[in-house]
Amino acid sequence: DQLQKIIAPYFLRHTKRDVLKELPDRVEEDIVFELSGSERKIYDAVKKELLAQIEHAALSKISWATINLSLTKIIRLRQIVDSLELVGEKIQSSKMAIAEELIETIGQRILLFTQFSQMVNILEKRLNKLKYQTFKISGEVKGEDRLKAVEDFNKSEKGILLSTDAGAYGLNITGASYIIMYDLPWAIGRYEQRVGRSERLGNIAEKVTIYTLLAKDTVDFFVRDTLRSKQQSAEEMFA
Image 1: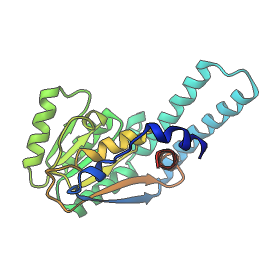
Image 2 (image 1 turned 90 degrees about the vertical axis):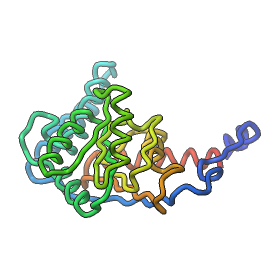
Image 3 (image 1 turned 180 degrees about the vertical axis):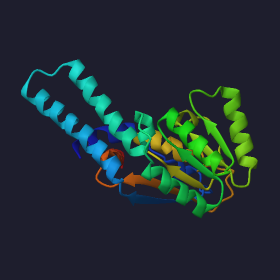
Image 4 (image 1 turned 30 degrees about the vertical axis):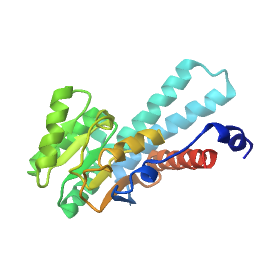
C-alpha cells in the first residue's frame, strides 16, 4: 500500500481493454492431466536431483555453477513434461496426446505456443502425420517467412500455427480464436504478448479461448502460480 501511494502520482494506467472496447472477450481454461508411469518415473528422478542440489547449496557456499546447474534441471523438468523426446527418450508424450485430442475437438484454426523450438518441430511432424495443415514460427524461421506463415494461416480453414515466443511480438494473427498454451512463459508480459497476437482488432470472433495444458504435480503448476502471483502484485501496485 505504501509503495502504491508513492508511485500513484507518477503513473496513469490504461489497459488495452480500457482503450479498445471492440476487442473480443477472453476465456481462459486450464486442462489438467496426469503423466504416464514412465514419464513420472523420469520426472521424479530429475526432481530428486534438483532438490538435492538446492539442499546442498543451502548448506554450503552458493556458486554460479550451482545456480546454473539448478536452472538446467528446472528446464529439463519442463522438457520432460512437454515430451520426453526433448531429452532423448522415445516414450509417448501425455501432453501431446492431450493436445491432439483438444485440436480434434476444436476443429478450427488454432494458435499453439511453446517455449521450445524443438517442441515446435516435434509437434509439426506429429500433426502433419495426422494430416493437419500446420504453419510454424520459431527462431529458425526468417522474418519474411514468418509473415508468410501468418498470412497463410489467417487464410486457412483449419490450420494450426505452431509458435515459440518469436511469434509473440509484432505479428497480427487475427485468424485464431483458440490459443493453446502448450507450456507457459515465466513472465506475465510474455504471456500477454502471446494472447495479444490474436486478441486484437481485426479478429471477428466474439471471444478468444485460451487453453493451458498442465501436468498434475509438476513444474507446470509452479510456473502457472508464479505468473498469477506476478499478475496480482502488478495489479495491486498499479490499481
